[in-house]
Amino acid sequence: MSEKEYVKNIKLICELLQSDPTPGVIQGLREAFETLSKQLKAGPFLEVFEATLSNIPFSALFSLLAAPDNKLIVTVAEVTGQLLKPVTWPMVHQTFEEYIIQGLAHPHPVVKALVLRQFLKCEQKADPFSSQYGPHIWKCLEGRSETDATKLAKQVLTHLCDIGMAMDYLLSEESVLAIKTLLAGNESQRFRVYDVVAAAIKDSDSSFEFFRQEGIVDLLLKEGSAKDVLVAMNFYELVPTLCESSVPYEYIEAAGVFKNVLEQVHQAKTDDSVTSSLLRLSALKLFSRMADAKGISPGRFYGKYAIAPELAELVLLPEPRSDLKITAITCVGTIGNNPEALEYLASEKTALEALVTVYNTSIGQLRVECLQAIACIFGYSATPSGTASQICYELYAKLDEGKFLVGLTKEIMKGFEESCVAGLAVIQKLALHAWGLHEIASYQNIVNFLLMRDSSRAKVAQQWQFAVIESIVKAPEAKSEFDDETFARLERYAREGPYYAVATARVAVESS
Image (tube, rainbow, N blue to C red; front, side, top):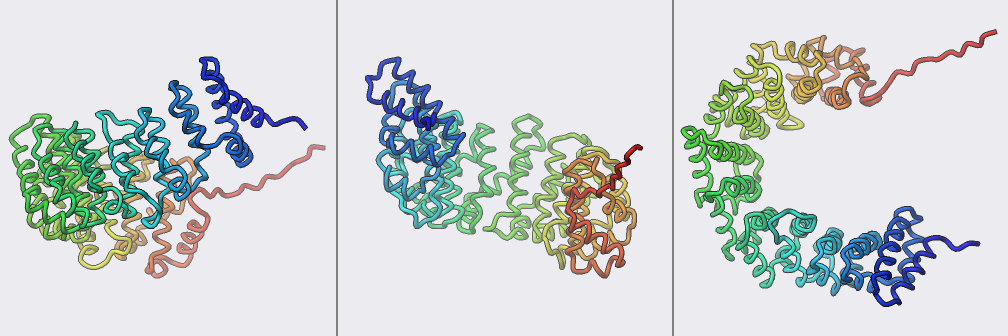
């Protein structure tokens, strides 16, 4: 029986590893490892895996990662990554701790990335770990430009924070020194650090208190008053994430952050510069995202920082394609997706009334933007009820002067993908409300459309059409709202799925 090709190649690598590292040997190793990488991918993986490690230990591979040849390093890193795929984190930590630290400090980003990927295998706080890893991982965030290594380092640190590793392993004295060194650098690496800090704070008030005592929270808050507009925008983007708990929220509020951001929105009215517009857009998004911040009461927050009048003014801007107008419409939908925040919008009135005004007179893309915001509001809960559902009904009754579903059905039936999808999304949210289900059942045109399959429609439209029917069938009131025949058809559609095609009988005719 002839020797398998991968066995021949492994033997060749072993021979080359015993030779002096001449240029010819280095070239031979590059080619042999490139071949081995392909053989591992082609498989059978387990056979090639076992044959490789039986002859070439990981220690030999790691030593090659220090070779003075970049192309060889990249190729060996690729093979090493494939061989490490089935190796669990506890085994990686137990066997390769020394190599991990060396790899994190390696000058080549491919090697750093190889090592960083191993940390993503660490799945729970109880997994073995070493605090020596922390400062080396933090240092991988360094650099002005974004690389695979910096992205992976941030992903790893965020992942380790998410599973509760931060306080025990990532915040040693040496790690804090590395963090502060990074924070003295350019804005790109500062905000990579801040992103990880936010991830740690999100799940742990202890982490917040640690970063506060180290002065890191105050350094972050100072970014909000930076003259560099991009720095300030990055800060605005981060604030809602920091407010997942009441403890950091109260500290941030006491520092006057929300008051200052709202003032920025007010001041921007008299400044039409590009910089001012960008800051205003970011500020609006900050306030809209606060609706979902777990550390606050949305009703109290929006009552104190009245953003609705500002949104109403922007929603009513005359220019239909204005970024400020579109962003304001989106923000109304985002805020209205929280029931408590929706009650604030209803009591304040101006923002919802502005949305109704624009929808009733809009066409084209602007109407699609309005529909997306309306879908967010109607879809604030999978089981809507009470005051918020009543607010949705009152909004529904004002849209298209009480003929919203009629106009929406016409919009959907035009067949333009974006408006069709946006319209179906609204109807799917309507079906979640008892009153919405009644409205759908009472309008035969939309029922007929929903039950009519059309494979020429875009897949995403067919998916939304199916989602509407699923929501209708699952609704407790559905059987009482639809006649038996219609409900049976809806149930059959739900069973058959979004892409069911009716089989056509084919008769073979034999000519005599």
